[in-house]
Length: 207
Picture 1 (cartoon, rainbow, N blue to C red):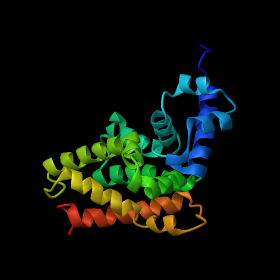
Picture 2 (cartoon, helix red, strand yellow):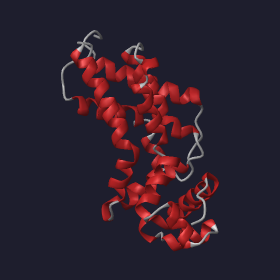
Picture 3 (cartoon, rainbow, N blue to C red):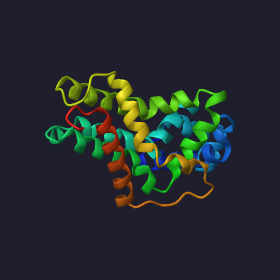
């Protein structure tokens, strides 16, 4: 077996993302990805043993890596001294980092939404980084409920509510043919609005 290289893996992921976006998950094939990547099918399977594992890698590389980074920062020892508002701001900005990217992540999400009703693509997407980021945010909510800074409720629900507020101003983008490019400052302002509304409704010391 030929030596596996990071460069070839990157080339395969680039090719696979193009095939998935052009053909959709259901219609895409490993043969098509191999052809686009300029490699044999045997080489492709040396890197990814199924279309599912390939799609998961594509999602983690181009889409949910923003969420994974957000979760990692919540767990980081360097950030434990931050206030709840600052932690939420940081998480939200990483979460919306996709809006300052090349939009491949948003296009992948559009594809997932479009096909979720007739395949397992939605579950694959959720397990490719979304679940771990929401679990991390849930733990933060639980911590601040126990400390008395947040009102008692279901921490998982609170995590989903905050996530929904962060995405509120971005939801309409999925209805547009051409997506605008946002600056880091514009994204930060969106998140600030979400943090303010969330804490006004849930923080015990904000009235």
